[in-house]
Length: 159
Image 1: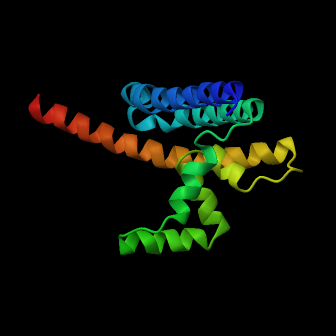
Image 2: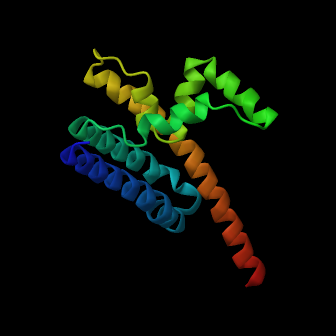
Image 3: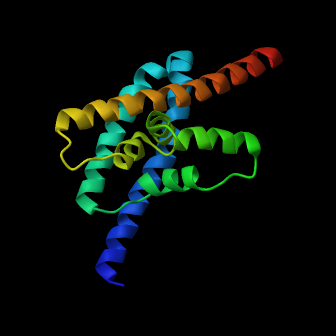
């Protein structure tokens, strides 16, 4: 294998993983602390911008680093849990549900790239990424808001 290609892939992978970890374990908890239940307001533009940056890097490096592969594997692999397999079957049979699932995990970039067409205009790309970011924001803001309520509740209980 070519050393230059391996180096390019390793760099792109490191940038993506660092971004995911910084976003998930530093930035979103910080938003939760600062904005509490209103964290959805700054989270949406943050997710949208981060995903445009990720798409930009994807175009520069031309490497699929986590974006499509994670989602494609999740959708295609059969689950041992019956309820989860029923959910996956519904997702597999619906383009809309596939887009929503991929937009939530791993990211709106995966939702876009999974259905990407070569003739996509910049406006269409923006609309698709903006819509995927809505689903991603709603789920992640919801999860962090629940965590915020639990932490605040525990704090007030022991105060």
